[in-house]
Each structure stands twice: as structure tokens, then as C-alpha cells.
Image (cartoon, one colour):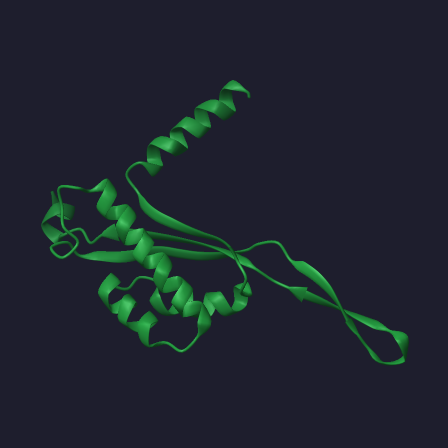
Length: 138
């Protein structure tokens, strides 16, 4: 491993120590469907987001809800002196990336075959505290 690559990896690791995030890898839902749910909750308070995800009928909203609960647990682990109830947490970032595609064959008329692409995705969620206005001024 090169020196620059090692230094860069160390900087990334140090930056991630202060950030509460969770990743959902290889989720067997198409990224397009997952992005619909991600767009609903981006930037919202975590309690409002949990209510939206709980009442939504989409299958991907249940997976996103579990990811948010995991992200909250990660935040709690990194901030042991604070409680979730007393802080204003919000979803800072949610992004959905495409993962591997399973390629399958669907029989078609006259001896032909159509390719079916079963898509999957990776979801990354980052939560953060809302900074008070007095803290921003100082």
C-alpha cells in the first residue's frame, strides 16, 4: 500500500469517528424504487421520518426504517453522554447507489430470449444534530 493512499485512508477514518452513519449493502430492490423513499425523508427530523417510513406501504420503506434505527444506534454509541430524546437529530444525507445486477433469461416467443436485469442497491444514511442559532453566531 502506498504512503499517500495510507495517509488518505487514515484521514477518512478520523473523519468518520465523528459522523454517525449506517450503510445498507446489496439490498435487492431497484435503486429507482429506493430513491423514491429516500427523497421522502431527506432532511427531516428523525421522529417524523420514522413515522413516515412506518406508515408507508412500500417494501423499501421498511428496509429504510431499519437503516434509520441502525443509524440512530450508531449515533448513540458515538455520543454516550447525550440522549436521543433531548437532541434534535435530523437526516443529513441519504443517497442510493446502484449495486450489482443479476442477469437472468426470460423465454420469449419463437425461440428467442429476453434478458432480465434484477437490480440491487447500496444505501448510505448520515444523521446529525441541528445546531442552535446561538452556536452558529459564536
